[in-house]
Image 1 (cartoon, rainbow, N blue to C red):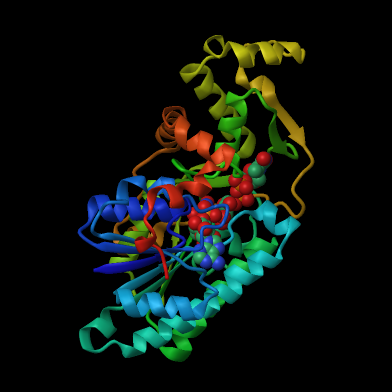
Image 2: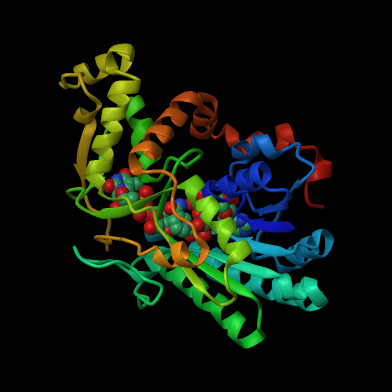
Length: 371
Ligand code: NAD
Ligand code: DAU
């Protein structure tokens, strides 16, 4: 099978492509605009695979998307391209409306036209898999779980834009018969996560002795899903999910934000103790801190506007119907994640310096780029 993945240079998209190339015989076309969140360095291992191709294309550019579909003739589309950061959606919602809503609509139209050109078994087997978020359901108080039947109640410009895109996908299924699948998942974490999000931001700030900004009192609860478990779930839904169905994907790992930050600090104390990081320890001491533990860097800051209190996923449908369960516990996944950031200083340095955005020019010949 050949899969067109949109947003494949992002955090989850790159994990999905690594999974497909490593563990299946399928081919992948990665269609990505390479915004600030796109990092081809996360796909370094796939670059020379004959089963991998890259197309630098904006999903809003329907003509280019149609060309890619015509040239590559995929059997499925997995749609991950999006603006994904809630804080950015609060300071600048326009890009979220453009990519997540207008871009998804444009992509759906291009895919619908392409799908109508397919015949027989290829047409029947085709799938459009839309990757969405648990944030479309709004938030929960201390009790309850999001199920696939929970009504939509998005809070932020980001989640409202994702909710809109979910509705568009379902409308294309019901109106035009496009064979769609939708998944809504909880907070992912793991390797190659851009350090604007909680977990990588805290790891990298701590290693530099910078404050660890916890919004409000850090009481908000998220359900953490290791990104490689998510990649496995997505592939399972693509290959076994029922047309028109929605599947919630979660990690069974509900944690308060402050607990997550404390776990990260404790792991760093163990794996990169401040005694072995004297420049940071001395800088902390110069600021009046004891310099003994990373947790001294925790700083409570103004809360996120409209901050959702608690997310928690009921993932029993995907377990029951498709046999998927996460393989990582939070304890095993978070340790692997911290270790990954310690073991990959080049990836980290290139993200911090912005050099990752030149990776394309340095590592790809123009022959491999879109015309
Ligand atoms: P990300 O921000 O890391 O990556 C997004 C990718 O999309 C980047 O490579 C970017 O270059 C690309 N992109 C953005 N706009 C584009 C456009 N107009 N055309 C083509 N490419 C474009 O995001 P992520 O964390 O990997 O999330 C992937 C998907 O999963 C998103 O749809 C997101 O809403 C959803 N999701 C993410 C999480 C999470 O915890 N990260 C949880 C639930 C759902
Ligand atoms: O639930 C799924 C969603 O998870 C995805 O749809 C989003 O794309 C993804 O970004 C993520 O959204 P969150 O807003 O939950 O993730 P973020 O890492 O930004 O924040 C996690 C929690 O940590 C949230 O309650 C806000 C808090 N936070 C975040 C940052 C960046 C802090 O306290 N301090 C911070 O500096």
